[in-house]
Amino acid sequence: MRAKIVAGNWKMNKNLAETEALLAELSAKLPNTDAEIMVAPTYVNLASAVRTLESSKIEVIAQNMHYAENGAFTGEISADMLLDIGIDTVIIGHSERRAYFAENDEILSKKVISALGKGMRVMFCFGEELEDRKSGNHFKLVESQLKNVLFNLEPSAWSNIILAYEPVWAIGTGETASPEQAQEMHAFIRKTISEAFDSTIATNVTILYGGSVKPGNAVEIFSKPDVDGGLIGGAALIADDFVAIVKAI
Ligand code: PGA
Image (cartoon, rainbow, N blue to C red; front, side, top):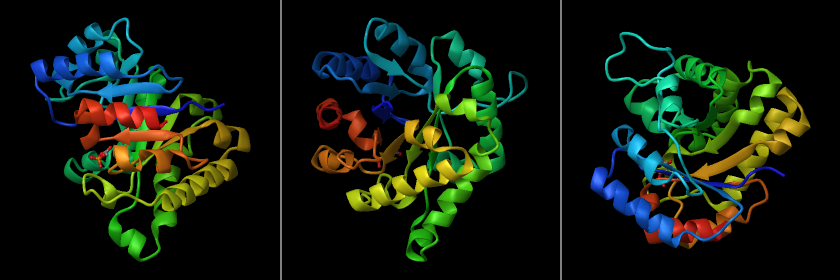
């Protein structure tokens, strides 16, 4: 059975005190669940978040990393630095990294290879822009994003990959893909992986949906057979909303 996951991507939000306060509230309010719960605070607060959640079920993950082991890359963070503070899962390929920091498939491929090579788990984000969907190019686009970054990996690498389908037009916009649109794309992703690798890998990989998941729509989205949870942005910053979304899984 593949893992169910609800992950909160806090992006560039919450200072140290706010981070601690939100973690305390989440720790107190989150229900017991078989799903994996993850939070991704900003870099400067990762180490303290790991300490705060030491005996908690909530896993702290990183929003990004550089592909190089170390060196002259001002402002960047390596896989080893994350592992050193107890973080072994990293988000790679978020649409904001692609759009604002020019991370293309070539760079993302290097990052994925580097993270996996260090034994980390990768949450790989991808998804189409509105124009792609309007022109009916969304399946092709998603297939190429997967192919360019993940399809050259060894089959064994897939046990450390989590996918997050995030249509760019639904991120932070309040507009969500309908549960049917999410299911249609997730099924397509599984079929594509099955063809490139095999059906066991396709069946076992966790595929999250991301893009304006809120307490009001989470139950319906998560009820779809190929949707294994969510990557949550805005609603992850409000404890009660994130807790409600976790309850929906
Ligand atoms: P959102 O963000 O929930 O605010 O749309 C999702 C994401 O960027 O992962």
